[in-house]
Length: 452
Image (tube, rainbow, N blue to C red; front, side):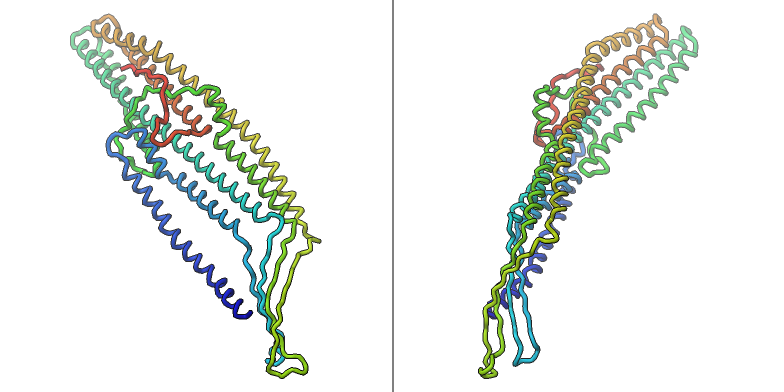
């Protein structure tokens, strides 16, 4: 029997270092590969125009937050492996009396046996944690996708505002030249030219502010794939595309599978599995032992002869003082807390979705009204006032007022477009976007051309 237990002891002591070495060897290349993937995604950023499809793909490939959620999912997969492991056996060796003739040697192998379904409950709890990590990863992907779409349209809107500011400078320069010509012709006083130059200087300030806003928007977009210095020069897209208005039935259906609700529901299931585990721990485990005992010779036998005996054992803890009652009560209370959190998450989600939907409807209505009613009238009034000023029918203040009205309406229209895309992004973040990276991330149902 001694020849049987010694190899087992050698294997038991040798196995953990080998497993540790394998784990360490496989961990290093994985993390360095993740860093290389992020660097490769940043190198894929084009130096010219950037499309929405490319921006979303790079963000989903290299966003640091997404990489962190992926590592958490891998950790929960490893936790399932650990939860399904059986208890290790124990090898015991005992010596009684150091004198050789009277020495008794005992070699014993003990194996704990889990009862009450502890291993199954432990694996179930680990699997629910794995499902939570997978849900968190999907929710994080939806958040990154929505943030990328929103940032993309912020850059697109900033580009249009810059173009409008540049047009404003051109129009202001035209008004200044017209005022200077009329002053030279003696038709108006020099005060008109001074007013025109002051107005042109104010518009140039707005141009510089628009340039700064565009730089900031580009940096925020590039930061989503971990690039602090954007390489792309501009984004390529239709600024006047309004996001789709989802129906109430569609919103209600997506709310049931929203990331925050799914997370809270999985937390309830995980807490229930932990409650079952604590109940199972109230049942004591048993330990079965098998060994060999070598005893000295008894009276009447020669001194050199020794006897071998088989040793069998069964160890059962007595649950007298510790019945795991406190842990069971704690697990049940946390399970009820998880159920309360699920109800609170559903209520909070409903409130936030309603607010985002209302913002989207309001922005839709504002943009459509401005495009249909305000922009054509403001542009017509400005053209008439500019032509009348050149012909001497209107004063410079009237032409300047018409110009400011037109650009204010254009700015309001762009602001409404930006608000619509932000609200749509919030809805995608709250409800989860099921589209793929390469799909049409933000479909448009309304296309309203920006007045030039």
